[in-house]
Image (cartoon, rainbow, N blue to C red):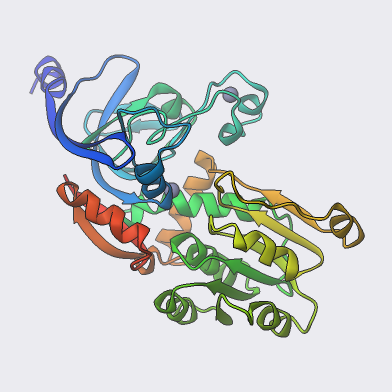
Length: 359
Ligand SMILES: [Zn+2]
Ligand SMILES: [Zn+2]
């Protein structure tokens, strides 16, 4: 096939997409994809449903202007050679995608902290995402190395989960040096909480507990190596204090958007602890930590947001070499036509991650 016939074929790519038209209004519809010189079109192999997608579907989000295709945890396949900073991604290459689209011109972009860009756009949030048979890749993503070639031993659905794994790696990177003697408490028993759990146990070898609200997930946390996994309730503070010999936890990762977790974190934090707010919260969180408690106990409350292409590369290595087992995080698979069921499973905390793997 000559280049021109291939290019014209690419300009007529029809596919189904799940279009978000506003809260509670998600429609699977047909759409045609074409590409221009600023964008490359790739084929989507799998896209996981994040808690963020479910929240946007139900309530909307200030960042999301409908109509828009959601989905930012993506495994894709290159259709036409793409020139990337370290070579060429040939047609047929499978890739993970860093969904952040930086301006390349602000202080943070100059420091390669693209996730903090002052004019950040994001695939699946401000630009069309992966709940579609094809996806347009903005040139900025290509420029910063945001298309990451993935090893053959990872399934498409595992590749889709490299993005959240990269975010968890970014979260850990904000905690500084982690002593294996440290105790870590993960508040949240979902896909993100249990990915943090695997990192804590397998990469940092810390004494690690999980607090959650879903019985089956608590069991899963135990089977995945948690030293303890507690149901959230009236005993939780005592449970965590017992787990940490009365001191409280050295590191606390808040991996749930439930604001109850914020107050719990302050009650089970050790002196000199670091609390990472990994999740976003709705505006009515009511969290107002006592500045004197922070000062006299030398506590740090920090945040982490999204990730960078470097983290995505590290995620691919850790998943491929078996350090992290992402297959344990995937529990449901759906076709694009069943996307509402996938969102519902996510909302109702059924299993862990649901993945759309047929378009
Ligand atoms: Zn996500
Ligand atoms: Zn920027």
